[in-house]
Image (cartoon, rainbow, N blue to C red; front, top):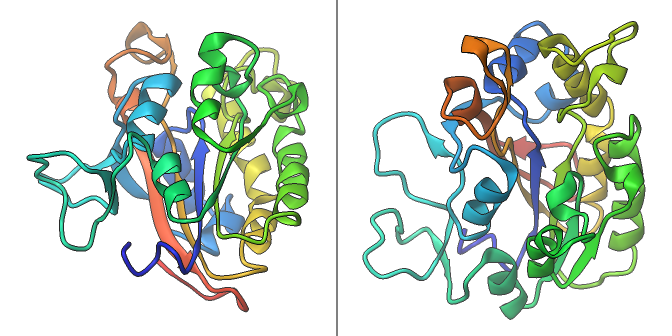
Length: 265
């Protein structure tokens, strides 16, 4: 990361509530060709069981952790005496959070929110977007919008057109979060099948995001879920519970080249 910071744009995409088992199954079945063109999913453990906790940890440098025994070196980390996961390759920032650290070295930090913790409509909903120099949210980006990801991409395109500096773009995608039944024709209730259909919707548009992020310079990309969600497993529905389908998330990181579709995973 010490070679990345300052030379690349940085993109962090959280696919809110996306379960690892669903993401991997759709990849295996060929139902997410957009993502398959860029990445393979790695199984990891979330740092939190719901959106606020998980993102607060990630913005401090604690990304989802590999499921194999550690310690595991982190790509970036807040300066923290005694940390066992800071390596020579780790980019260490002397700030309380990643957006502030990147701003200190010349990045424009931008949040394009999705779920309610990024809507800025309440003091709590303003905490996470308040870490960024620039934040964007409107109801068409949120969980009740069947076209939310497309509207977010429209805003991303507008934002990137006005910023000459390196950019740290954070994008929280709300499509997989309940309610998601409108992505599955004929569905009356949310289910693991409508959750999967929501991911297929995002997949149809993900290449546009990656194309936008490589128009100016190479881009370092992290795509992951913040946590999973339950659809009746052991009687659980939703998240903020210590269940395997909540803690186990998909993760990928790679570099996109500025002038081609080549990438390294």
